[in-house]
Amino acid sequence: MHKLLQQVGRQEIKRQEPWKRHILIDPHEICDVLQSNKGTRTVKGISFDISEIDEVIISERAFKSMRNLRFLSVYKARYDEIDRVDIPEEMEFPPSLRLLHWEAYPKKSLTSSFNPKNLVELNMDSNKFMKLWEGTQPLTNLKKMSLVLSKNLKVLPDLSNATNLEQLNLSGCTSLVEIPSSFSNLHKLDDLAMMFCENLEVIPADMNLASINSINLVGCSRLRNIPFMSTKRYGSDTKLEEGNWSLKTSTQVMRFGLHLNDCKKLESLPEFSSEFMFINADCCESLKRVPHRFNCKYAHLNFSYCFKLSQEARRSIIQRSFYGPRDFVNGYACLPERELPEEFNHRAKGNCLTIRCQGNKPLYAFATFRVCLVLSPHREPQECTIPSIMCRRISKDGLYPVDDTQFYNDAYPSLSGLATEHLFVFLSDMDQEDKSLEVTSEIQFEFSCSSPYIEIVECGAQIRTEETVRSKKGAKRINFRSCIILCIILVTVVLIPCFNLSSL
Image (cartoon, rainbow, N blue to C red; front, side, top):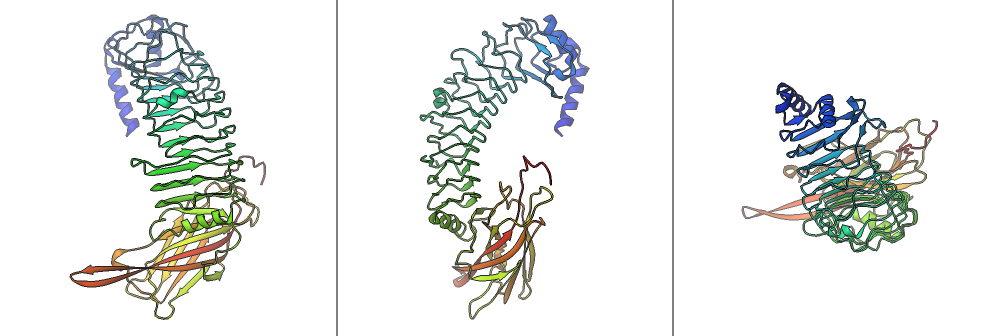
């Protein structure tokens, strides 16, 4: 639908007389306007695909007469590294601009006359900037700023006045060493992306990012510490040594995420609390301590290759997966471990487990249960795949017989080239309110995996019961809900991503 609307809009523009057009989209017409100073006050927008032209030399006063120009977009629909645009040193941008999107801007900085007072969005990806501008600019209206792949950018501009900035993307700024102190004024910043800023070493300790919800530091390999930040963080392939942050969740923040892939010097994680939590600490080889309790409803906890985790930390991670019925839906926990925890008192070899009713204790067909996987190398994989775990639950008797299969497609987050056993815990919920009292004599579980390189060699289960008393029309109704916690030992090899795989 979006492309169809674009086509309709372009057709409507082409029907207009050239001197009446508010938006210029024809590359050759735009070349003529910018080279010959033919722009007028009628023009409000320019969408310039420079991959359609050979070369254009823009006049110094090309935009002088376009006093009502609101957006300027210069881009390459077919990307290449050819410079097709020649810009004079003192080219004037109209101060009326709200959106400036210029891909592969050819100069080392914006012109000295650049006035961004009305600018709402600045997108200058893949440019040759060494700096954007001198001094402090009026940036009160700026909400989005992207400088992705500004590989020569060494100094960020002063953003003291960008008090309404919400999104900032500096990913791929490989020459950037530090973040300026002016970032402390970005009180409305919600999303900060700095992926693969390979030389970034310093983040100011006084950054007061009160509204931040997402920080992505994937690939910042020289970053060694992170100061106080309040909500959702991503940091991968870093050299963090300390995680002594006071991570607190404000009443407005319901999610928390922390990506710390390959933080090989990180030894501990702080306490935190959130409705949704995603922790990816893959290959944090020095990690020993984790929060005593992961106080959240939906947790994705990946501690694969964290071989130095203390026993207390391992128990904390495992117990978090047993936090309570229905609290771990769509979540998981993964950590190095060879043995099934003792609480899994129902055990069987292979990929099938049968739990039978014992004594007078009822067994309910529509129960909540959790699955735990211990992964270890099995045999050399012949291809790179993302495996799925299938869990089939069967109860043949009662008013509502069960025969249902559930799939877990994200069961192996960030696991590549697994070298030893890992414990994986996740929850499956089949509860149905009107059938929650359905009693069965036995429940059968059948587990399988889409990958031929994974073998289920043992499974265990722990049953927990929650008793809820309900009153309806003066009568007491007892609702027993079984929470069955399962643990499966798997043998696996996963090579995702296979970045350096040379042969199979």
